[in-house]
Amino acid sequence: MTQPAKQNVVVREVGLRDGLQSIQTILPTAQKFAWIDAAYTAGQREIEVGSFVPAKLLPQLADTAELVAHAKRLPGLIASVLVPNLKGAERAIEVGAHSMLIPMSASRAHSAANVRKTPEEMLTMIAAIRAARDAAGSKTRIEVGMSTAFGCTLQGDVPEDDVIALLQGGLDAGAECVGLADTVGYADPGQVRRLFERALRAVGDKLTCAHFHDTRGLALANTLAALDLGIRSFDASTAGIGGCPHAPGASGNASTEDVVFMLTRMGYDTGIDLDRLLALRQQIAGWLQGEQLGGAIWRAGVPKCNARSTHAV
Figure 1 (spheres, rainbow, N blue to C red):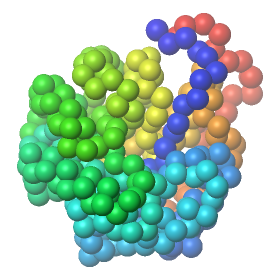
Figure 2: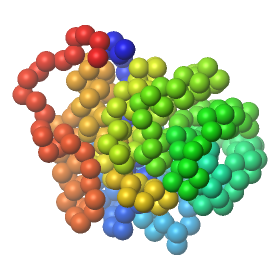
Figure 3: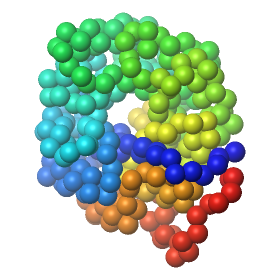
Figure 4: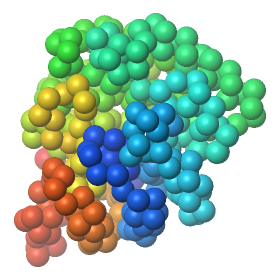
């Protein structure tokens, strides 16, 4: 069981990428700058600002290079981007992104639909990206996000053996760290514990991040399950925006403000000011009127009681 302690936990903001790519509204670049600035002021120190994909496919993310440049002006802020292919990685290297996330699907069906490649072809591409990164003398971190690790709306069950083999394959190909993602919101806490335990035995501290969607209302429970096993970096999206085009009815990502509230209440240190984060959430809600938003703490409010957990949960 979790023993509360003053340990640091990173909550990486993915709303500007995973969130915005899944909705119709196209935010002006100036509003995205304001989002980054407000998140930074609230204490967030890692933000996934966008993705290097063709603008005709995702016009919501067409200004990613500008967002990286803006984020790099803020001291101590890690600007990460998603790159689905070698060309996207070359752009990330060119603009000096601090980290690039390569989406790799454990589900063969999802891999074909999402990146038009087999998992084996993705491993070959990771090796090419690592070679390009090293040849450029770049320090951009290469991270693999293992999508559909807990199941897939297209394929159904995803064998855990496949997930573990691909995690190791990604590292062997040149990735420096890996994460597990519940892309379609199928995971439950028991499954999270089981798969993370296996993955930690297989790749150790190279497994650094968890990414949960709240499609079925279990994002916080799944976050707690991974936290219990020592994971200290979580992806989340302010206002819970996001989803997956291959997950009908998906209700978005774990809400940043809910994750921060839970961790803070338990005694963990995220470095994030919840009041400032909630003010940003309200601002984003104004920008995204008509879009589906998520989260609970914004509606219920922060408890007036200052009590914190003092015993195992």
